[in-house]
Image (cartoon, rainbow, N blue to C red; front, side, top):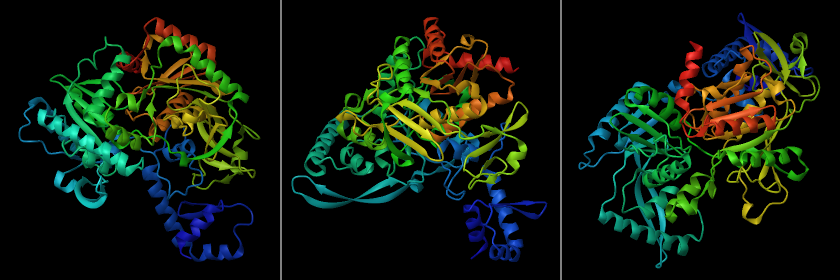
Length: 625
C-alpha cells in the first residue's frame, strides 16, 4: 500500500489528517487507528506529511476563501449534492472570469473572400485581440478541425456508405462565425437537403437518435454554417457575429415581442450565442433572451464579464442521473397548493410570458432534431420559474457551541475547518456572521417547483409540480399520477439556483425561510427606487453566467450569504440579480411578495427585459461610494 492509498483509505473512514508547523495532526473516529495502522503512519510519517502538504496546496489553488467563512469548493459540494465524491473526483466551481478565460479554447471560422462588412470585420479582429489578452487560447481553423468518419445508410437502396467529414475537435469551446445570408441558389439547395433528410429520417432512422454532426451533414450540405462542423454540441458552442438588431435592443418594444425576435435570430443563425454589432453598440443574445447592450468602448467589459462566462458555462439542463428519483403526491403538500396560488396571483403582472414549443418555432425538422438533442429531449422552453421552499428540516441542535464543534468528526471531502459531523451523521458548518463565528447545522432542504415547460401562472397541482430535495445527494420527487404527454417530465433548468438560495437562506438568514419561502424568477429587473427598508438587492456586478448552471447557483448562494456580513436584520425580501438573465426574489411572506411585485409592475418599476438594469447598477454603485 502506497502513501496515497493509505491516506485515501483513512479519509474514507472519517479520519482527518493535516499539517501544522511541519507536524502531522490526526483526528479520527474511535476504532479506526488500530495498532497496525499506527505503525504504518509512524513508518511513513515523512511521506504522509509531504503528501498532505501537496494536497493542501492543490486545494488552495482552487478553493477561494470568502468573507462568509466558506470556500468555493465547500459551497459547490453543498449546493450540488456532491457529498460522496472524493476531492479527486470533484472539481470546484470557477466564478472568476479571468480564470475562466485561461481555460477556454476558441477558433474563428475562415471568412469567404467575398465578405466585405467592414464594421463586423473590425469588431471580429478586436474581439480576437481581447480574447487573447484575457488568456483565451485561439486555435487556427486548421488546428481546430479533425477528420471524422460516419456510416450512413442511403435511403431507398438501403446501402451502407462511409463518409469522411471535417469536424471541430471536442476540446474547442466555441466556433466564432459571421452571418452570411444565403444566395438564391443556396436557398434551393437547402430545400432539397431538408427534403432528403426527412426522407432519410422516416425511412431509415424511424425516430432513432443519431449524432448531431451526422444530422447536420445530412441536412446542410447545401449551406455553410459553423454548426455543421461540431462533433460535440455539449462542449462546443457556435457564436455568430451579425449586424445589430435595433428592434431587439429598443427599450420601447415589449419584451414579449422581443422573445420572437430573439428566437428567430438564434434559429436563423443556428447558434447558441449571437453578437450584434453596430458602429456604437454591441448586443449579446443567447437562450436567456437578454436584451443587454454595451457601447463599443465597453468591449473589454463585454468580453470579460458577459461573453467569456457564457462560453465557459453553456446553458444545459440538469440530467436526471444527478438525482435520486422518487414519487410523491402533490395534493398532500400544503406547499404545492401555495405554489399554485403564487402562480395564479402573479398572472396579472405579465412577468411570465408563455414559452415555446420546438415544433412551433423551428420549422425545419433537422434543426428541431438537433436542438432536441442539445436540450436533452425537451419539447419546449419557458421563461421564469416559481418555487416554494419548505421550512428547513433539522435533526437535533440547530446551533452548537465552539466546544461542541471541537469534538465533532471530520467529513470526507470537506475541510474540517468548515464542515464537521456528529456521531449521528448530522453535518455542521462554521460560518462567519456579523463578524463572529457560529456553528449551524446544515439542514435537509426541500422545495416544490414548477416543472420545465409548464404554465407558471396556471399550474395543475396534479402533475405540474415537482419536489426537489438537497440532503447529501440531490433528490427529485415526481407526481405519482401524470398525464400521458408528460411521461418524460423534466425539472426546471434553475434547480441549482433554487437550492442554493434556499440553503444559503437557511444558514445565513434563517428568519427569512423558517416558515417556508416563495421564490420567483423572471427575465427582467426592478428599478432601484422600488426597494423599501428591509428589502435588499445583491449580485448586480456578477459575471453573467447563464441560467441553470452550477456557477449561477454559487453566485446566488454568495448573494444571500453576503447579507450576513452587513449587520442586516428583519429581512423581508431579497432580490438576487443575474446580469444578462433576470432577477430572483425570495421573501418570508407570499402575500407580501405578490403585492410588492404587482405594485412594481403597475408603477412601471418592474419590467421584463433589461430596461432597469443599467440604472439599477449605477444607483447601487453610487450607494457604495
